[in-house]
Amino acid sequence: MRTTDFDHRTAAEHPAAAAVPGLADRFRDVMAAVPSPVAVITAMADRVPHGTTVSAFASLSMTPPMVVICLDHGSELLAMVRTTGHFGVNVLGAGQSDLALTFSRKGGAAKFDGVGWTADHGLPRLGGSGWLACRTGELVEGGDHLLVPGRVLAADALKGDPLVYSGRVFGTHRALRNPV
Image (cartoon, rainbow, N blue to C red; front, side, top):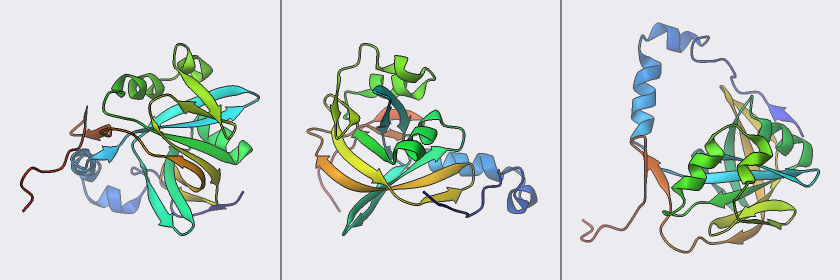
């Protein structure tokens, strides 16, 4: 699996960031106001489940169906995704913020202790979440993260309201009562 180089310098190393004092903090504040879906990305290595919480994923293509996730260069899960060539996207519902917190911490396979899951397409699928099983595409460098495209092999929609992260808190999204 190839990696396309974009620009992997950290904000501190990038000339544009150095030229604008406080840019990183202002950027972080702007992005905190953007509602993001919350998912647990999973992989399986030697029959051992692994997972991490992300809020950086999106639909990429309808034909073929593809998504993109973003994983930190130092992520243990990224190493497994590179090795296995597959990952699962567990799209969390509004009542699953506890799972988001559980999988946002370090802990390897112990994160799955007491969590209901099954194997689906050889990947850990969490109970009650929406589901995408994906085959990994060509990785793309993106600063301190890698963009990981995934070709969707299986999909099941979330039933109910989604879990979103905005303003540094969990919440959900509902349609406006009186759209303009």
